[in-house]
Length: 336
Image (cartoon, rainbow, N blue to C red; front, side, top):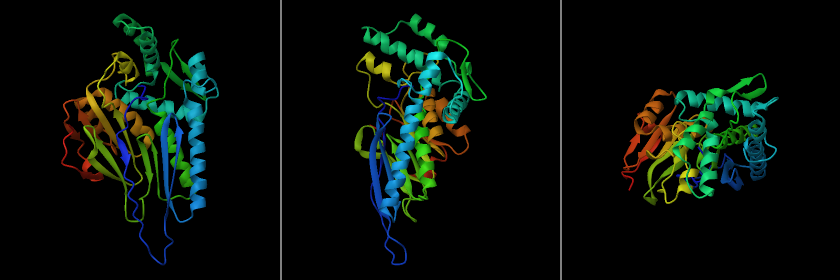
């Protein structure tokens, strides 16, 4: 479920459309980019006062940095690191409890195809590849005994593992949650038109202007100058999981999205794109659908209220959920 090499295929359409009206203050386009969670994060705000927009953006980035520090499984003093090292965490932050609860919900919905306890398998692959060979099937099967989201419990303010040495990685959900928190900060600063894009995990506030929605393009994996669709978003989120690159080494496989049930990289799809109300759920569901594959993945999407999706299969077919068309314009382009 480690998504560090995933090629984000969502790009922001940056055409600026500002309508002028003598009675209404002109909207300024204020955009800042910083690196958070090892990815470029772009926050765009439309507001008549540049200084207020910049202040809101700075506060939103500060919130995202806090989430990064809290939920990293590699930072020495993060809550997730303490949880993984000790097998329990008393007085856990409400933020971490929330993300783990949402993760478990996605695990239940996907029958375990999304599982934050997959970290031991990811670590096994990385360790064995660095040693010069991939893990054996016996090693993978033995490590899979540590993978089960049902072995995490939350009681009062404490988080507990029922087995050791379990470990969690929030790489498939924390970025979406950081986007959601940034949106909350912007709203608290009375921002009514904004977009936060964390490497393809995107959430919007309102329209870009009073009459024009935020337009997000999904690139054609075969030609980055073309698009599969343009999504018109208002107060919605979108996220994509996938990898358009073929495997040229076992090391690449070790860094790809791991199927928590098999211990091997998920290979059935090129990508899965999810539109949902919040980025936390969109992020996790995109990973779950990518692991589930074409039939089960689309079945999961269609079973959820307020969720739409687009899947690109390995043979380049483009599949859309029944309600996906309500969000945008489609190019007559087949992935190639």
